[in-house]
Image (cartoon, rainbow, N blue to C red; front, side, top):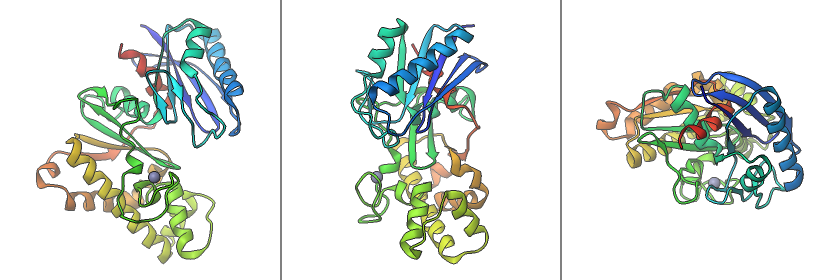
Length: 297
Ligand SMILES: [Zn+2]
């Protein structure tokens, strides 16, 4: 079976795994990255991940999932909120030249969707949207069995769809985005708006909810309604068969999932209620979705 290297670029590390088309993992190496790495240091770290994996296991193509915004035609990362000093990073031209191998490239949320499509809860389904509920809120869309890229690979920026007109300030600089109400950063910031207290993490926030803290419960309630509006918009625009959640906040799905699904069902057209499935995804390594970029061509 053919083997591919999948590379998952995160805020704190770059992970690489050699995998085959069945999702079997043959090797795994990672490099930690400094949030303030500039282009050169960052590209050297990517090279080391490739070299270490190649020593363990040979592969014929490389798939890279990166935070965006990106340009999938030129293979550049324009910038990244988590790797703040990256600027117009020529990741794909650099890697192709250095290793003389074909490289496929896409944004990390699209790779998460591709991972679910090939190996997770999306297996056997041709239309699905994955929402990444983590520090921020991302989206990836598999449309008739293919990633929906839009013009340059930046389609389905689901977190920055407006759900509240003139609403809370978002990290993107605008107001009322879904991400500013339902993401780790959004929930913690909305709690701070009401109390002045800065919580350390989303886990702290959900633990307050479980203890019955009225402010936290109110913030979550609003966040659930905001996320439901986003999902309503997505379902009505795309007629997707599935909405799949991945990311750190899914660990608290027991706390918000039931209410969320009830709310979505209340506000979508009845016809969609009959067949649209909403569920938590598999816990897949990000490298699997990145490697799956190589399956397509
Ligand atoms: Zn935004």
